[in-house]
Amino acid sequence: MVSYPELAKRLMVSVCAMTHTTERAAHRFGVAPFLPTLHADRFTQLGGIPEEEFRKQLAGCRSFEDARWAGYWETFAREHLARADAALSRLRGPGAQQLLDPDAAIDLIALGDLLAPAVTILADRGPAADPDAVQRFCTEHPAASDAAIVLDGLIKAMVYEFAAAWPGWSPHRLRAYERSHRLSEVMLTALAPAMGVSFETLQIPIGGTDTVRGYLMLPPGAQPVPTVLVTNGLEGTLAEALVPLLAYRDSGMGTFVMEMPGTYSYREPLSPASEGVYSKVIDFLTAHPGVDGDRIGMIGFSFGGYWSTRMAAVEPRLKVAVSNGALTHRSFGALASFGTPEIIVSTLRNTTSATSMADMSRKLAKFSLAQHYRKIQIPLLVINGSRDTLISTQDSIELAIGAPHAQLVLYDGDDHCAMGHAKEWSELSTRFLRGHLFAHDSIGAAVQ
Image 1 (cartoon, rainbow, N blue to C red):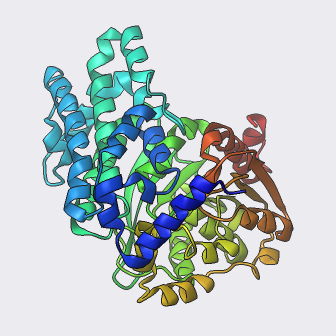
Image 2: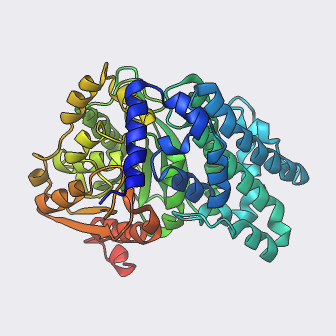
């Protein structure tokens, strides 16, 4: 049952959304009441930022207006970039601002060698980075402390640029998105050898005006390997999806991470026909020399879980799928309902190219997968929290009931995508994907 304070908050959020007065209310109350419940968690977990520190920063933000929002969060990005720059200077490496410049000539091999002694700061942070990990590392490895400070500063700058970019669609936000993307690309490319992986930044043409930008991470060696296509949600980035998965890089599987169509770098709106984008990505993966095209799986988070579910039903080349926090049917009505913040509504309207709330409701209704459940003939792992405050948990339950070979895991009391149990479901998902992609492989089976 919803408490009276929560009901009052939803009422205020809805009234502000309907009257387009959210910005005015944010000036008085701050932006926090008009953000998803888990907004802070996604940034603190990715960046290893103390929760109290980020929530204090969040309380100080008083505007969603493009320049003010982006400028506010970039203040913190610059602070961490300056910290990284000072440590890079002590290491006689390139300046931090050079790393942000896509036209700068940077010796990424040399940068990787400088930072390799502290590679664990990036590679082993896992689904929820420990805010104390860097200080602990510096105490235990004083000779590598500057390298650790550089990586921590760059990671936090990347995350704060991501916060500045959220949820995209406006000029200052999109510029912040590109800076966040650039920092992630530099770190992952430079440190791939130290992490023991092959790393590629890819641009996959899909026709029209769009190109899929993604990261492909493969184990070393020439033998094609089973590979998992990973897709995130409405306003997630490549780094947000891939960095937590680095801790599982020894699984023997390849990983290709892409952002959901209709977001950030895409130009075409999201629609049910966007399944063609994923099919073209699978075309690319099956043709890649490092990928075993007969053993491809897929995992999606939030709205990305919708796509891993849909593709499990329509794409015969997938052998296994994981859907975490998937929207499948009931949630599409809930997204345009009572209590949805105006920033989320406007993002959905932009993503779907809807002209009005009524048009958005009609377009979202067409996404329903209720008739697709029975078509899913591959193993499907369905994950969510039992008390999802963003979408309907009932979608996960009905999906698991309807799909013939589905398993359901709901984490008691947890919220959307079970973020409070990220380590548990990450390990579970890895075992599930490996178990099916290596089902007839004696080497893979030996390390289950």
